Structure formats: C-alpha cells, structure tokens
Image (cartoon, rainbow, N blue to C red; front, side, top):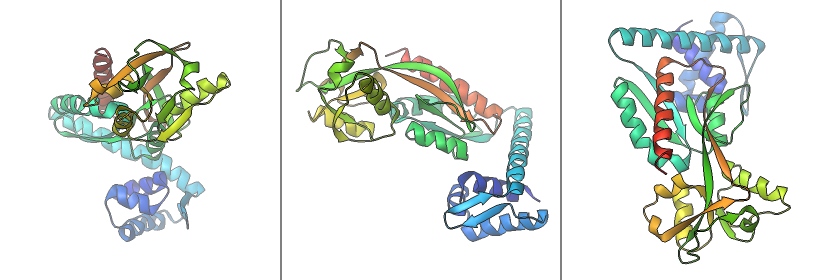
Length: 299
C-alpha cells in the first residue's frame, strides 16, 4: 500500500463514485480506478462494489475506510508538527459559507487566515446549508457555517450565533419600518429561496403552526438576485440583516423587524464527526468565530 492509493480509495468511498472523486482529486478516472484496484489486489479482497449509480463499500471496504481516514489524519498531523518546527502551519482547509454571509466574511476571513498561516491554503465555497452539510459528510468540505442544522452521525454541529430575520421591502412598496407579526407575513407576496433552504423552511414551519402558509410569488436561490427583485418592487423577502449589508443599493430597501414571535436563524459551525480536526482546522474555527462575532456586533 502507498499513501496515494489510500487517499484515492477514501475519496472514492466518501464521494460515492469514481467520477466525483476524479473531479475532486483532479486525476483522470482510469488512472484513479487503476490505483484503487491495485490497493484491492494488495489486500487480496474487494473494497468497493461498482454499479451504474456509483460504488458501495464491502465489509472490508468499511474497515479500510475507517483505518484509511485515520492514516491520512496522522499524516496530516505529522506535516503540521514538522511545519510548526519550521515556525509555521501547512495544510489545506475547505470552508463553506451561506450566501447571506459569504460576501461579507470572505475577505476579512481570508486576510486573517493568511496573516496567521501564510503557508496554508484556504478554499472557500458558497452553498445552501443542506448541501454543505452533505459535503462535510462526504469529505468535500472540512467545515462550514450552517443555518438551523441538526447534528448527525456524520456531522458535528457547534452553535455560534443567532440572527434575527427581518422583512425587506422596496421603498416603492412601503416606507413602514415598524415591527410586523408572523401572521401578517402570510398576506404579503414573498420572494424566497427554493426548498430545502433553511430560512424558507423556518418561515413555512412558523406559519403552518398558525394554520397559514406563505404566499410565494418568486423563487430565487441567490441572495443578490432576491434583493434586486425586492428593490424592483416585485415582492418582499425574509432575510437576516447581514444579507442587506452586502447589497449595493440598500437605500432602495427598508427593513422591518418580525415579532410575535421573532423569527431567529440559528447559525453554527460544523465539521465531520468521522475525521478528527487538524490544528490548522482548529485555527480556522477560531478565525470564523472571531469574524462572525465582530461582524454581527456591527449590525
């Protein structure tokens, strides 16, 4: 066995297919398949069952996956220890951010990362909480900021902050900035992300408890697109204040607090429950916690 074979096998197993793993590893699929096959020959038993939809693990493959993750983690720890002996940190960390925070956190978080760990590599991607939680479980992300997510056997959730949700409307539609009740939301034309967006699911749940449902006139998954549509007077949106702060035409919108009851999005950072964190990843968590605290404190 060599480390490349172990790494390739773990990625294929976590991502569920050779196609996805070849993209993630940036290696041709035939070459990837040959390396995994050589590992199976070395171990004298199949690790993966190939089918038209991807791969599944054999019993031997499940054992190998657990040990393989441990081996790769120990190698990463060795690299970190050696890098610290040289006075720095090395490694790569893939972080996912929700759209409402990505535009405001990406630059300060990257600056803090480069200042504290100039030899390490930070990768930032943007996505919905449900999608990013799946990416953590499958090994595509090391950590992410998630809204209203629950822990699972694959993912650990660590509460970080609460963000009140507000109603955003065009000044053309209304200049009212007084609080609005949850019941009243059901009478407004809303522009919301498609399911299973965490904020949409929260709004639908709170209205359903009251025997109501939202009147959704447009679905849009990109925060800038939602804000543009609201500014054009095509409907209202329900978002945290952080979404508005990144909008270039904020003076075209007004924000109303939601009360009776307040709608609050729970923000947390999440990591894999299967893979121990490296020191570089722990440092990134500290950076994220500090940046979120500083940013939300300015709202």
